[in-house]
Length: 609
Ligand code: F6R
Image (cartoon, rainbow, N blue to C red; front, side, top):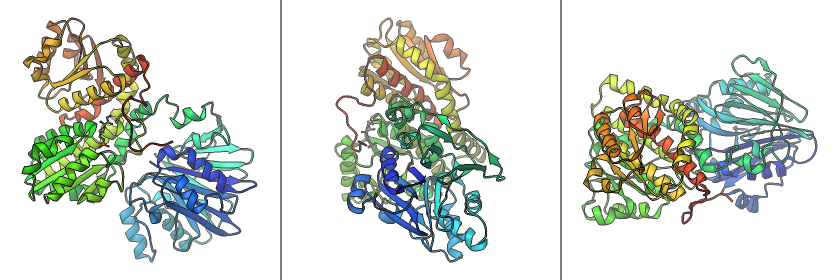
């Protein structure tokens, strides 16, 4: 996730306007920043790694001439946060500048093709190809308009993008386009703007036009024109008046970042399906050859590891040890050695317990693999191979979207190892591939259909003194995660267990009305889980079940239920089943009068001020 902004003004300098707008977009990314303007036929660029204020202190982002320009605040996806990788990216001659938010899936092929045609690309980003594709278009058809050249260029892109470009050939225009990544136009008396999100526009104007997927917009200081990328036909769309306050707008209209991030999951899951194949393949190679694999992490990331241990075992027949990072050295330190592989999972890539375990394993010559959300974090620097999960900044303290993204990446890895080991049939492979592809849509359905029901359930149980969460098999990880969310933001004491363990003591807690949340996918554990529900009901528990749509057998038995779409594959089930539990924790916190974004005693290592 990154923030883009463009400004075409009638009078005055665009640079300070862009700089101020990027500050308002900083919540979308903050590892590098850059601006480009055009004045008197010359393109000016300032960019560097670092937060906006740091870069401004060194380079003065207000001091570029010209009334037209674009800017970018970055959350790295391809290429480390270095000056060379910061946007805007330029063509060979330095006459075209491009900013981009999204992921270009076919950038490696495009880059190769451009290099064959003599283009020199300087960065490691996927974005730079766009500037060179535009240049190539001008080289091949010099009399074509800037808008048409950009239109032809974006037709070649596969993946997601919101992109804005300027060129010295037509220095009075910004051309922007959208596929999946957000883009809005701002209409004001003094000019026209484009931006990733409404908050960037609000102090300038509250008149906005949403750009839809597959559309391209040509902006100048006098007007804007929307075209369909497919056939260049013109689209007429009137501006709308936004009544969001700047604070609401930063949160996308949601009252809290946590809720915003829960709602972002269809998009963040989609991003995980666009990871570069060769990184997944490389990591799968290390995992496949490993004698023993330790999956090391803390908190929510540990729950992802726990689920992954079922995925690797069930799909690839690969035994792995999920390990809580703070226990890793005590529990396994001596047995870790040159034959061991550590897959460390950490959203931030900076969690000290995880890094401590990794460093000890490194000293013992183990192979370190990393899964993280932050490019250039310590974890990426110490890993032999790392994958960046592409979830965008996590500003809510409670991990939500990053958990489901971790699970999606881990499932893809397990599938790859399974394929190499010949452990899955073609039919199974196809089925799982298809279910993976459907996840973003299914996540959307869960959010749309269950949120209201979750609110009612949260109202009903708001005064509960404690909760029990149960799951079996891979759903144990889901139960643990549901419990962690509830405890950390709603401050309700909770226990989570593999359901089979409840009868070995914890069932003693259950008395009439005691709330028990049970995760019930329709997998091999279904029958046994029904037994667990009966056990709980026999003791008067109030059972809330998360079930697959149409699971009447369980629905009849329980007090309340939440549903996910039917047909989810067992190994992928935590990705959907956890969403109602994230919402439950969120609404329980709200019901109990707590701010879900500011859990007590917890802080994020990276925060946006
Ligand atoms: C829970 C939460 C924490 C983190 C844990 C690990 O909502 O956010 O439990 O999951 O501190 O953090 P990372 O993944 O950054 O290593």
